[in-house]
Image (cartoon, rainbow, N blue to C red; front, side, top):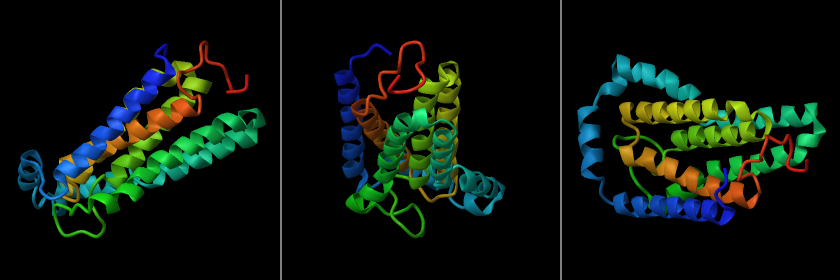
Length: 209
């Protein structure tokens, strides 16, 4: 990763701005894409596809950042020299996960069907995307050879989580897209500010090393 830090920050800022723009765009009225997909999948939440999606979404959801937090703590307990790295990763984890909690009240978007809580951005997709991003950062610092796998698995898990929420009829397509934009925006800016990006040359094992 040779891109200068300022470019990473600008990229993150642009992605976050896109998240805000999309949120205001769909705040009062869903896009045609949202309506068409929601109409096509109406009632699927009570059918086999919805039942499968319900099981998947229980795993790929808000529990994942907590699990990763425990993993970061375990790494520190095993090797105290990784405290700085894990503490900074924890900050990124917290900031990215907070995007759903902080911005749902801002946009006040309603769900496609009757359901508690607001809609934009999807909290489940934010959770999965956040976990995936921090796992990629963790691998970049401790296990560089696994970065490519981490990226692919994280992307696949995020898409699957989004698809499940849409099939269940509890989120619009743009809720899930906005979630990814928010996480990438906040994640790139915060990770760069905390010197987690760019990745270390040669896979150094700690930020202090």
